[in-house]
Image (cartoon, rainbow, N blue to C red):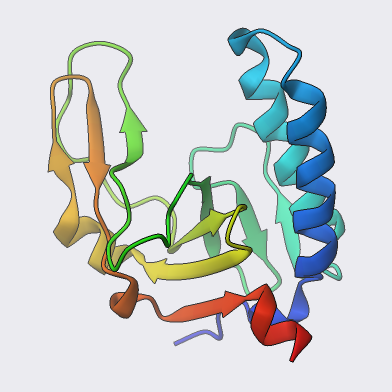
Length: 158
């Protein structure tokens, strides 16, 4: 098994600080611009990853690839770590009629909670088990204890 990304290799302080600025700026923009906000936030992850993550723009296998060839999907989720399970996270939007569970693309899902300054990583096998097929989307609710990595900014500052 290849070694996954270690969150200590990311400059999480800078990621969250820069995200705050992007989110503040985008408060004045219409909802149609949220895709661009996501793009900017993912570029920030890449720039603060110490060359560990390369951003893949519109790639079918995920948002990032690491130096070991592992693919990562990244989701910023409001209140992701407010409880012991995440809110529903859309992992696939068919923008119409649902085509069922998708085949495996990424290796790991990284979930970010900007307000709580926390990040967690889940393997695809767990994600696949938790997928709920809905009308036009596939969602998951994840138990935080099932994360293979969790890091909070408060841990970094101690």
